[in-house]
Length: 115
Image (tube, rainbow, N blue to C red; front, side, top):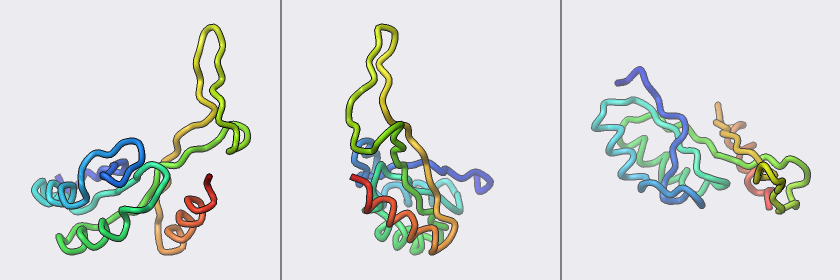
């Protein structure tokens, strides 16, 4: 299964979609013989250091990412757009993956300035 890489995974550090611990995820990836995995928790990078260390210890390539929210208007606008036919949110989800250290630094900046 080394030819498949999950690029959208949440750990127990994820604010909305806590799924499994970093250790559980890395153990499962190792059991399946996969060589890399991404973590894209909602709105934060809290799991990245433990994830990086755990993945490295298992010989797995860690891919660092984040699932961020992109506001339709202002990021301070918290209202839902409600019409008789829909209940739309005023934001969308976007998965970002860091390609290198500069990308990781950019992810940290984006997560830090978000309110």
